[in-house]
Length: 244
Ligand SMILES: Nc1nc2c(ncn2[C@@H]2O[C@H](COP(=O)(O)OP(=O)(O)OP(=O)(O)O)[C@@H](O)[C@H]2O)c(=O)[nH]1
Ligand SMILES: [Mg+2]
Image (tube, rainbow, N blue to C red):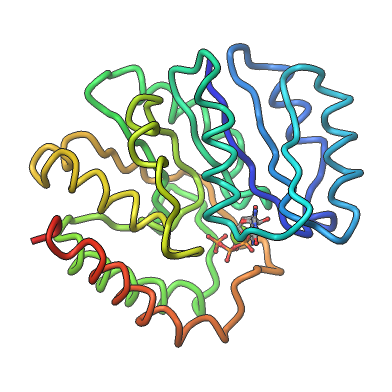
């Protein structure tokens, strides 16, 4: 069984039931756990509707106060892990990465050597990656600094589409994250800390996505940009011994 956590904060206008319902109709051994992170709009009603249409294949974890994406994903994963799951994951609820990419992730995860599989938004011929230039270019600069900190040739740590072996997830989601948006970088740092860089680079597998669309109405505002170097410095400082 695989559980994929969908973090949702005031997503009523971006959540549509159709894709979730039809995807769950077609798959077995996979369920979604939606985390309603203190939403104040109609997210709860939308999620209830998805739950009622999909039965036991989806459930909702609700927080009365907003925890931020990192903690919401972490709590969702911790909720899923005691059940009989081989893998857990998380997927952005705006479906910027369409659910149709999930089977590719699952295929790659059948190799037991691959412990964390994640999507990469690489614009290339033959793929349909629609990302605004004003998100793409800052993203590449941030990715450069993330590479420098992790010392791994990773293209896109920040894509919100990841599938992780349950035993590894038990280790890397145990502690709260210090960063609410760059927590993905901490996941990589924690794997390096546990297994060393050499082994980490064999356990982590980056999949170039076939389709990705910038959905708009992002929760990350331009005001967050100046905070990114500060958050990256905090991450570097916290994990510096393990990352040397
Ligand atoms: N639980 C929780 N989820 C959040 C919060 N803010 C955003 N999210 C969720 O995180 C996911 C990604 O949020 P977006 O606003 O799409 O972020 P983004 O900037 O578009 O990220 P990209 O799509 O990678 O460019 C969505 O499923 C959101 O609902 C939050 O405070 N708490
Ligand atoms: Mg998005």
